[in-house]
Amino acid sequence: MCPPLCAMLAVEQALQSDARIGASLIRLHFHDCFVNGCDASILLDNSATIQSEKDAAPNANSARGFDVVDNIKTAVENSCPGVVSCADILALASGSSVSLVIWSPGGPSWCVLLGRRDSTTANQSGADTSIPSPVEGLSNITSKFSAVGLNIIIDHVSLI
Image (cartoon, rainbow, N blue to C red; front, side, top):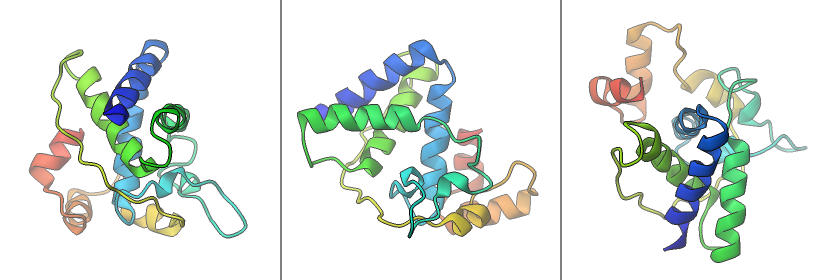
């Protein structure tokens, strides 16, 4: 199956030149999923009809890893054209990052289920209000995690 292998290899190569890219890919996926689900809307650029989530306060000048996702998409399209969504690629890159970064290669891993659909719209205002801020109080963060079906104890601690 080509997608997981392409993602793993691309993330591994990116980690060789930037040790922080794994954490950046996990954060990118987290920020994507917090706004209207895991739909790759964070990857959309500004256009006449789109206000990109890239420019939302939690992402502006801090979200990284877009180039790694683009490289994975190119590799996947060369092997399996038109099959794997950008949303799946972002999930695979995030999962590969966990496996490669935490406790060195061979860290925790899981089977990333495929089948996500890419969004054709972005929600910049949703990104501004939905993504937890590092300066928010615990009750606000707990509320935001609960709103997307996450548990503050298990999921929040895992992300920290």
